[in-house]
Image (cartoon, rainbow, N blue to C red; front, side, top):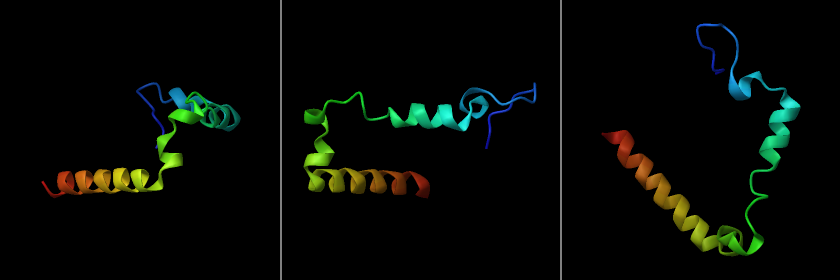
Length: 63
């Protein structure tokens, strides 16, 4: 869904070319130093964090 206000024109990322959006997205993890990327070093930690997030989301959707 694009973000269109009363002007009828796309705003923000929706107004950017696909190439520009791709180049911005590619920079996502580049600012984090490799030694600070803990999930890439410890898959059990990543798994636990994902499960914790899933439980948290599940609890919210039941309310």
